[in-house]
Structures are given as C-alpha cells and as structure tokens.
Image 1: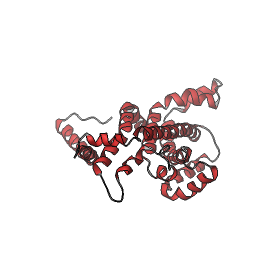
Image 2: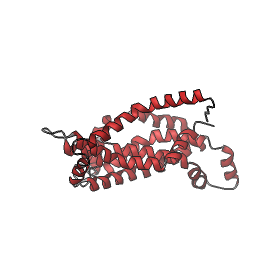
Image 3: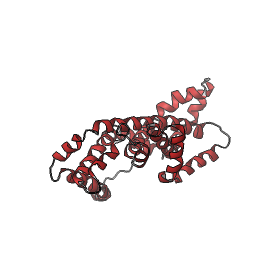
Image 4: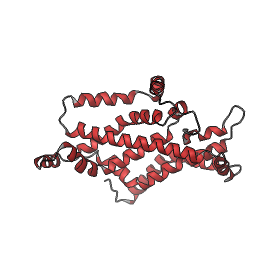
Length: 262
C-alpha cells in the first residue's frame, strides 16, 4: 500500500484525488438537483404514481439475479480451468473467449433476435438474461483468472495428494478463497444487467416483463419532454446499485486489487 508521511505530500495527494473524482461527481449532483427542481419531491411522487415502478423493479431484479447466478457459476468454473487445470490448448480457448470482448452489443441484435424468435424466448426474461450473461462472462473470467493465479499452487498439490478430486478442490478451495473477486463480479454484473437498456427495449414488449431502465420513457414523447421526471426516474433506478456497492465495498476493492499481486 502507498503511504505518505509528509504533510505536503498528503495535501497534494488529496488534491489530485479530489480533481479525479469531480468529473464523476458533477453528473450525479446535477441529476439529483434536476430531479428536485420544479415540483421538488412531487417529481418522485409523480414517477411512483405511474404505477409500474414496483413491477419494473421486480423484473429488473429477476433479470439481474439470473445474470449474476449464470456469470458467477460459469466464471468461477472457467477461471479454475484456465488457471489451475492442465487442459490442452487452454490458452487458445482463453484468447478466443476474450475475442468476444470486441463484439459490441448492437452488432449482435439481429442474430439474437432471430434466435429468440426461433426458440420461443421472445418477450421472456431469458431473451435478456442469456445474452447479458454471455456478454459479461469474458471480462469477468479475465479478472477472476488473475485472482486464481495468485493462489499458491502448493495448496492445490496438497489437496491432490490427500485424494481430493477437481470438483472437491473447486468447492473447498476456489469458492472460499475467491470471495473478494466474487463480490467484484456481483457488483460489476449487477451494474451491467441493471443498467442495460438496449436488450430489454428490443426483447421485452409488455409491462409485465419490462425493466426499470425503461421508466424514463414514460415522461418522454413526441410532444413532451419532462426532464425533471426523467431525472427522478434515474435516481430511483440507481438506488439498488448504490446499496449493493456500499454493502460489498470492502470485498469489491479487495477483489479488484488482489489479483494484481503474485
């Protein structure tokens, strides 16, 4: 950890960190101020009065939970295999998977739409859960593999000497020791799934399945654009993510930094 003892260094470091944070803080402050302008808290009451907020929250929670479960399970298994198991050609498979990071979401809309129609998944949660999970797995595996690489090989060798199978090693060593990076995966996956706008817009067409990211569209139309209600909707949408991050903040930071050291 980087420590400073001189007062001048501490002041300089504080100034640098403050300047770095301000560009990210200003939009949040502006959003909250805009949401309280005009009718004040009445903007939030107007958003709630639309009557779809609880249903949209439920739909977003179901999709986010499904994506998190799939991403966590497959990411841990893939990272364990790519890092500690002797698999022929594993580096080739690893870089082929990372190549998926170069594919933007919008490019995949047409094949995903055709696939969803053929499988009968259109306007269902799975039409959004499965693509979102597939898009987030490569980056999560990249993070988690570096973390698993930092776990000493001697620990796995000792487990094999004691007769532990690969599945037992995964359950009793990988899962407990990867809790910090698991928290990072949960937060990053939650943010990606909760904030996604394009896939729910295309694949979910009824209020019974639409997500919270579509809430601002109720206040934007061809003849009206109530930005105070849009800002209030954005604040409401961000609340679960803020709570989740604050709850897992320590593990999240440990997970992102632990894999940097061997």
